[in-house]
Length: 440
Image (cartoon, rainbow, N blue to C red; front, side, top):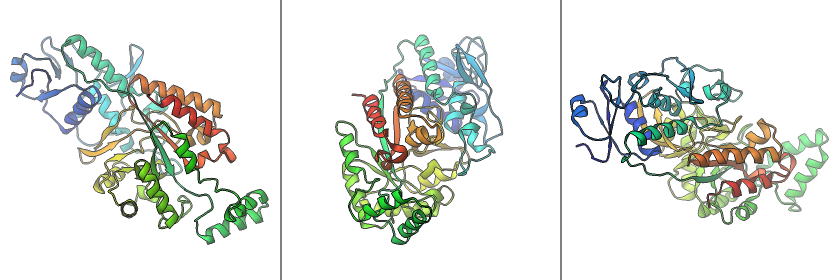
């Protein structure tokens, strides 16, 4: 049954799982269009309703010319070239007089959202991650442009021109602040053997000021610099309370957290969970070891007493498709890892949440990916920006997300509010972020 108010899409080459995924993502989720797919070309020809052909037209009809990507399986080693259309970058150029657009917008969006390029051989960074410099957008200085959202707007304009009565459900801008609790305390509640080792190192290297600070915190003469949770409360009055992701991995060189079963940490988790949603921050090793990931998810579930639904990988360290496949298997429905540590912007080319498509299994999953827009460590440690430069970068990114009515997601750390060391004057950066990104 063809709905009278739906867009009919004719697929003469057959309907694949890739087509179902990207038509649903681009048309329904991003543009709010109801649509129906058919590979019955007689039905397509006879139906009097708004319709487009995903194929090469043999007569005058609105069409998108396929590049072939959506009828393939696997990940052939290919990188589409960039062509500029009306001064905007597009992929899978397919010029044709009767085409709605001179490129295969569906293949282009699928290539970006599936992270097709990350399945190809690459030179990993120091932490085994896919680097921004390896990506097509990174190499072409396009990370700050959500190209998939741009392409969806192009397609929407064409559809509106062809079919004025076609209905589009409007989107609205949203803001989701998040905090990663890599280490809820700098000194307190950590094993004494670790503290003694660190203190000995400060003593042997003559870092007297750091040693005295450590001792004074343990003697309760000064507050722990990373315990900024009262300030977090104060900052978010009048704003959405942040989603907090807790690291519960075993202590090592990359997981410098409080002991996961610490009563103090568990009390903090329960306290934060009453104020806003909490998630798991799977430890450094979990990107390549799902058994560890499962233990950490189970531990957070036991602490809060409710299923764990949200996750973000520590160090933004994940491997496709294995990490996201494991998260799906363990009941996670929202992941917030889709961003680069070294660059702000749009790793998957969008500021809209979207479902993870497993290219190895060739199937859409239940895991929804929430793309990260900006992280404190990116601005301060990777780009070496001043607080003023960081604030301007945040404003520009927020303006872009507002333009495309997307979701602005910030990542801060509790230690970044300490006003100590490299984080002096960065609390005001966050205050301006909250003010500027808040939609109200």
